[in-house]
Length: 382
Image (tube, rainbow, N blue to C red; front, side):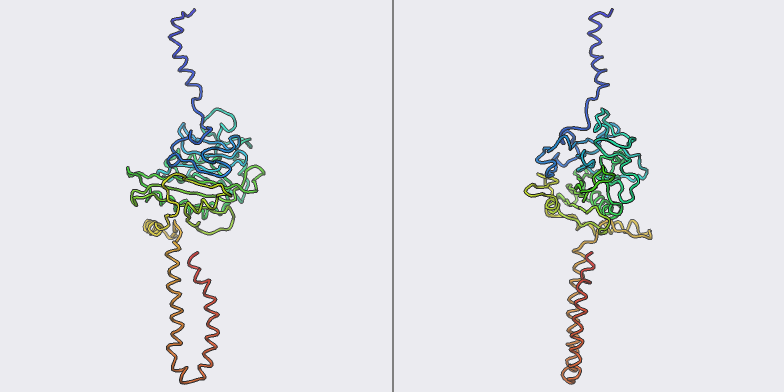
């Protein structure tokens, strides 16, 4: 029989062993503040009806997931278990390495009342509180759209972590592979070129979300009506804070590029009634400025890097401010050139009345071409 002294000596070891086999942290947490490191100044977005003034409005429906892979937290997601899509994912961009090989799609086990804190492979046809990989199969219209983009992962483990279905929404194929992808590429270039902290390292904060729609795939997973994204960072190069926002309708037909908007415009778009939407409340992020003025330089850099490639692609959209002056400067020319016939041919008008009788006909017909040119002057802006 073991003596009391020996039992007392073994007690600390037993406690240590118990702690080693019992989960000491959970990755589905009650508050956003329990998952630090992915929000600017740890300031929570304000989303009407979902997350207001730091409080989740329905904790049975909306779950905070500290997205964990290989025992490391990678980013944070606020997940809607009713619609089975994320409300938003927030992450700190530190640079993105190129990697093409993607892993199997995963799920968050703790949403299904299991204790494993690491995301797991989706191997069931259906789950009660989240989407499964089967929900997205055999669907030609929608694919798996990332909120935290695969291409934004700092290293391979970060990239793998983005392939959890709690970071995915049904996104129209042409939208995901078109204007949305162009936007992600453009913002990534801005982050890498202009978002540098005092240590010279890349650092930018991005929040990407989805607005629920009225339809579902396989009567299970909500199809968002629109997707939105915003970023903010301090630029050591510019010696100031910079920010921009984008959003687009989750539809088949849309523009090649999404318009670059201010944070204030995004707030106006997603606010409801007297409830205000905010992405970076209480921070120094500019509300009325965008980063569009940097696009020409980014596109030029991209052009130089890819000068030997046959296909030339602009990462960022052409600036309306740079293209619109051209029509305005050229449009006066028709107005100045059209008087030229009248100024160069005053002699015929004075010497021969007959040409003056015939010249009004061109003047009556000339307004028609000028009316037809009005939409043509707008064409370069698109």
